[in-house]
Image (cartoon, rainbow, N blue to C red):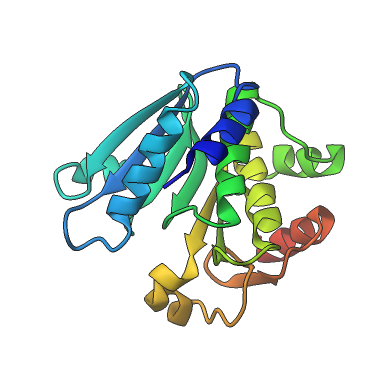
Length: 210
């Protein structure tokens, strides 16, 4: 999935990792459209750093584990360290979303979160669960901004789960949530933020949802 030049570039980027990061890949056999490609992409990533660990879990054989992490669609990647950080990639993180994946690896490994003090204060105050579903396509250059922001919130707060969803792989979810364009962030199933909104705008929309 990654040619030698890209592997070299990724190796330089991930050289900044500090702590080990675990990738839990929930997959299945022939019925999963992009499971094979996602598995290959994760294997390529493993060649770029010794700070990554990959766990491949069959969705049916590991039903309890899938339920624990709220996995409903395949493939899904859970990015975590010694604990679940609420960071999910549903569908292959290809195209522009590959940068979102690299960003999440660095964030979990280094612990560096680039949120404003105001956003952190809001997340510290909120005790209700917040689930962010960010719909994207691999060819959308604006989508990583929305995904990275949501993942930062999830990493910072144990009450937030943030999930990138690759739209073309899950058309039934596009219908369910009325997704006409990307990025679109669904907040707790019923509220929506269109586009790559600035941090303060997403916070205000989350406040409305709560």
